[in-house]
Image 1 (tube, each protein chain N blue to C red):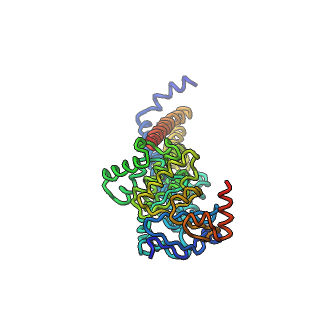
Image 2: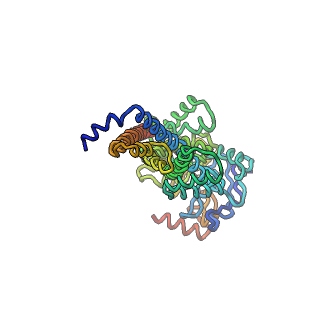
Image 3: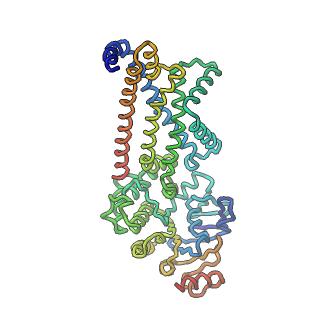
Length: 246
Length: 229
């Protein structure tokens, strides 16, 4: 069984039609999966479902052989220990400094030694290029800096799988590069990642495999070069031709 | 008129009258501060009980919402009468003071619940998402992330209402609770000039309300700063 195994995942909310339909995806350790597709195709829904922010209606998720029961608090807690998610809008805690944002979950939730966690948090912030900003509050940071704090916060959890949900979509173009550089270095370190992004060139560069979603279903998966250069399904052909034109 | 005031004043500010007014002042203070403190505590509980992400049990949410929406819309005097007759009907022995206190608490709880709700909602939902995904318990989301950011929104209207409750306690005089307004009425019927009686409690009310408002502003400035720095 794959390290992360998603089988037949189906999600609906608000009494509407399924936003995810029978999605299956296997991810091996160290793989970087690019999730692409038009807006509303369900890419972000997959990530939000994995961390239990949405409840699946059907299907199974297993991490490292352990099945996740999203209805059980204990099982959900265990799953959330495996994943860390970074959001499009950073979602930093506005009442805490960058350092506290990064250190709070390991100290408070994982009950680790505060001095040790803060040392790690400083290292992580240095790693994303924010050594001088440890004491800054989110509203004193640019979007790109906030997003890098958010990535550091996710890494502080020592996740097995990092979920990146359109992490550059809210950034000014000149700030996108700094965040992508951070992600590149994670890929080099062998971090398992699921990346939802509209940065096709970036996906092509870092992803080991790409899954194309449309209307809540996985239409096609494959290595990025094949997906972008020789799309099989008509929907992916249409999508890539539209993307590549601009 | 001025001459009469000057002539009346020594007689009015006799030690007996001052003791009488002092006891009434104590009741006003107890009604206001104990009532508001208990009410606000219950109100925050109601706000938590009403919030879908903090408390999951549907019937409690509906009941809490019903209570808040009803009690915010009934005039204080009517609430006072309702509590009064509710105690009579139940046959429970309660002093007039207790009845007034219960009314202040019920009233303050409803208003505080609504203010706290606005405070909780002032924190953007995505911060909840982030915290939940990191395994924060609901209680920790509330105490570490939501509450520290809510004070700025909650404190100004809360102290506004606190001052309002101090003034509302005067309505308790309608059922004969010996608080300041009732005391002034009694002294007035004993022949002291209305200007002296009500002028005195006017000043005392101001001396309670104004520092309360100032305290609220100070607290707001302090908590606001801590939330930032």
